[in-house]
Amino acid sequence: QVQLVESGGGLVQPGGSLRLSCAASGIIFNIYGMGWYRQAPGKQRELVAVISSGGSTNYADSVKGRFTISRDNAKNTVYLQMNSLKPEDTAVYLCNGRMSSVTGNRDYWGQGTQVTVSS
Image (cartoon, rainbow, N blue to C red; front, top):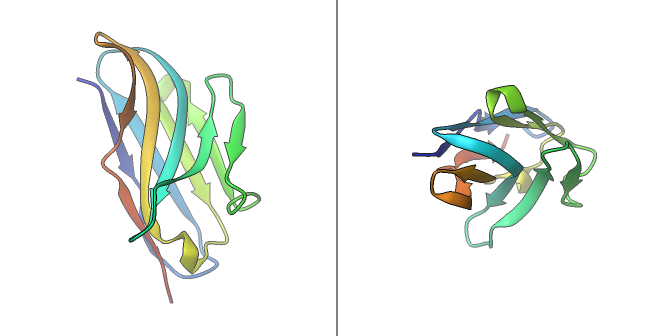
C-alpha cells in the first residue's frame, strides 16, 4: 500500500522558517510529479509548489521567492523549505504525488501537516 507521510509542521513566528518533508513508501514503480498544496479554514485547497520528475518547479505567486520545493528521488521524498513566513501562510499543508504502483498510475495524498504562523 502506497502512503505519503508529511512531517515538519508547527508553530512559527512571522518571518520565521519551517521545512516540510513528505516521504513516499510502499511498492512504488515510479514517481512522477510531486507537490505541496495547502488549505486554510473556510478556503479552497490551493497549489503551493510542484516539482516534476526532472526537477522543473512551479510556484504559486504568493510564495515565489520565499518557498523552495525540492526532491530526493533516492529517498522518495519531497521537501518544502518555507522562509519569511507570514500569518496568511497558516494552513494545513498536504503533499501530493502521482505514482505508479501495483494498482496503476494515480494521485496519492498525505494526511496533512499544520503550519501556524503567529506571534
